[in-house]
Amino acid sequence: MSLTRLSLGEIVAGLQRGDLSSVEVTGAFLDRLSATDDRVRAFLSTDPDYSLAQARQADERRAAGESGPFLGVPLALKDVIATEHFPTTCGSQMLEGYRSPFEATAAQRLRRAGAVFLGKTNMDEFAMGSSTENSAFHPTHNPWDLARVPGGSSGGSAAAVAARQAPAALGSDTGGSVRQPASYCGVPGIKPTYSRVSRYGLVAFASSLDQIGAFGRTVRDCALLLESICGHDSLDSTSSREPVPAWASALDGDIRGLRIGVPREYFVAGIEPGVEAAVRQAVAKLEELGAHVDEVSLPHTEYALPTYYVIADAEASANLARYDGIRYGYHEEAPEGGSDSGLSPMWAAYRRSRG
Image (cartoon, rainbow, N blue to C red; front, side):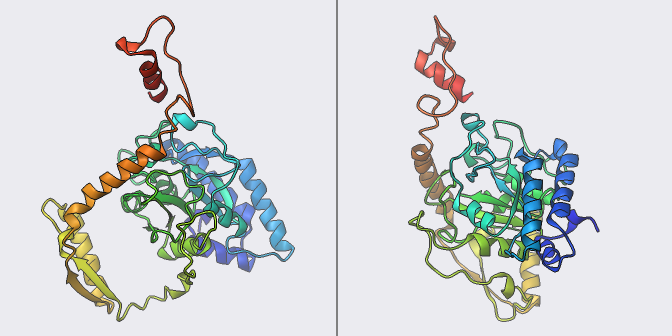
C-alpha cells in the first residue's frame, strides 16, 4: 500500500514499531504533494528541504530512544496559524511574505510532540469565506472534482488531506470553516468546544467564535490531534482548565446507550434532498448500532445566523482594522498628481492596497 493511503494512526503505529521511518513517510507525502498540487493548489507555502531535515532529526531522536505522540509524523497547518519557519499570510496580500516571530500554541504543542511540518495551507482571506476561492494568491480545488470548490475557509487543509498530500491537518472554524470543507471534501473534521484549544497565535477573525480544529482520514485521527493540541494555556485567558480526555482510546465502536438529540428545526424548507437523506440515513445507522435517538427542539435556531453575523462582523471589524494598508501590511500609494476615479489620495491608496 502507498504510504500516503495510511491514516495518521497507522503512521504513528508504524513509526513506533520501527516499520516506517519519518524520512520515507515525509518523502512520500512531499512527492504526492509535488505531483498533485499544481491541480489541487491546497498549499500556500512548502519547504521540502526543511521538512526532510525535520524528518531526519526525528529518526535520529527515535534511534536515540526518544519518543513523542507524533515523533516524525508529517502534518499541515492552515495559514492562519502562526509559525516561525513558514510565512503566515492568512491568504492575504496584506501579509504576503510575513514571518511570525513566534509560533501559535497549537503549533508549538505539535512540534513538541515531534511533528514534521509539511507547510501552510490555503484559505479564504483572513478566514472570511466558504469556498477557498477568496485567497489573494490562488483558489483551491476539490480533489474529487477539480471543477468544484473544497469549501472554506479551511479548504486548503481539507483538500490536502483528501488529496493524500498530508495525513492530517489543522484548520480553524468560526462559523463552519472546518466542518463545511470537511463535508465538501469527504474527510472527518471537528471544531472542538470553544476554549478547548488555545487561540494564542491564531490570527483573529471573531474572537468569541474562533477555534482551531482538526482534519484527518479517520475520526480517530482527529481525536489524536486534539489530544495533543487541547489543554489550558496561560497565554490565552479563555482556554479551559478542564483535563484533556483520552478521546482516541474511547473510540471502541460501542455506542450502545449513547443519547443523541436531533433538532427538528434543522430540517427546514429548502434543505437539499440529498443532504437530508444522508443525515437521516446516518441517524438510522446510529440507532441500529444501539444509540438512543430523540427528536428535540432548539426554538432559537432561526436566530442563529443573524446573531452570528452581528458578532462576527463586529469583532472582525475590530480585529482586522490594522490590515488597512496604511498603518500595517502591504501598501500601494495613490498615483502622483491625481487619484483613481476621482477618489481622494487616501481612499485611492486604500483601494489599491486592498485590490
